Length: 265
Image (cartoon, rainbow, N blue to C red; front, side, top):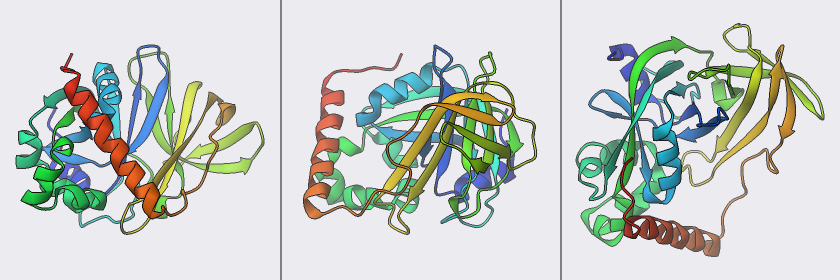
């Protein structure tokens, strides 16, 4: 199925999105991503530092890209969930990314500009051009409730099948060991193993982008917490040394993955 023009416009207009999937053990996963379009198909371009994540995602039979956060959006944005089968393209030379996705990433993800915003920077940071591009071959799209200003969370539930239940939700009354949530679209919520994703980022630079997740068992709109994050707020600003350390770690991990000879499976 080719997604319709309105859905393509929504992906094109979105600066951030959320990706949801189940691993081989049926464990639900969710993470924030930069949504791109490759030949009118939704795509995520992971650097080689994320090689394990990209391969794990590509092995999932089904995934959902959620467009729900209205911050930093362009014309044509709307909240939507796009469901489909993930397919991995290993772009080890960075040619496909450079030719067809780089301009989108520079527009949507400002930290990339410090690495790839000129031919000189691209040569210097050659290790950041190769990408693991996960393309979502869409089979359906459904509306979801928008999360204005990033408020609300994304819920992913294993409903004992290959297709996870994915929705945007708001919290009701808080608790120490449980979280009560309701669908922003008014949908009934299922029962099953679940993960609840929230994230925040610094505006407009996205230099800091902090996700946090609660895991547990969802029943009747109540998540009984089994795993809770240490941080549930945006990380503090980075100092010069912290920025340098992060840059060196990213370069080291990308080079290591490229030198290991990893290939698509």
